Image (tube, rainbow, N blue to C red; front, side, top):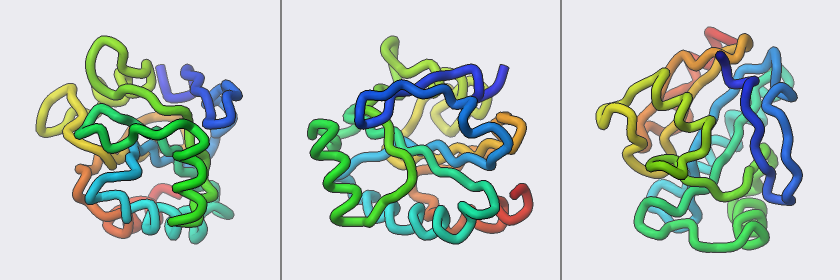
Length: 157
């Protein structure tokens, strides 16, 4: 099993296979618009712009499970990301990352790379790095700034 076994719905409602990102280094991150960590969008976008031509892609998954910090609609989320942070990497439809309704992708990522809370996501902006073969290789805590992931990205890209 790998990340390519999953589908996800973009903010525009289109469902895509993560197979579309085959042979790319991927960062999967659960996001929120009203979180103290929301400025990480800026760092994520910088990483994306710097390495997208070397096959890095960032996949943002808005989630409202932590302090009701992503309560907006898909249009609200899209507008917020573009207007405030100039986000150009793919943002998906709002999902759950913990509990019985958790998106299958996050169930897989959490079971493969456990965090300090075991199989749970601690908060918004938990980041998973996936190699070009679709295998999760490292999990980063919500407070880890995107630029702290750059050395790993350079090693595996």
